Length: 167
Image (tube, rainbow, N blue to C red; front, side):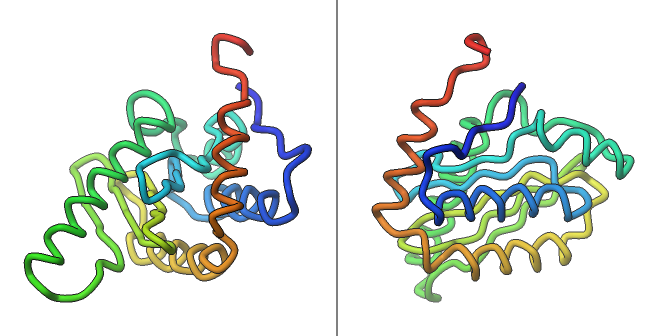
């Protein structure tokens, strides 16, 4: 699998790609990452092929949830929606982040801006506090630039990428 191209993208879009790649490559235990719009559409995702070498060099395993980045986006969107509804029912203010610890992995969902979400699939041995800290850094850096125009550009760039069968 080849890395998604950033050729022709705006500086802001290239910076978001760079931030996302760094998140995956620099934080031990992160398997895959997805940025999802408020309407549940995948905007940006880590590229397993590009980041597999970095994970294997750290002694990690390649892989993410079964299926594609779109599957992670669907899961993140669903969990985000569920927790937002729960917060409204409980009248405790907006949801900042959600962590799900499973026997063989972890899932983290954090609000970015305007309903956009950052989702991270982590390994069972990841340090949840380190992952959450680095997610918060990503959100702090990305939140103010994730404008409607940039979301539209990111969505269009994903639609124009070749599918796995085209590669």
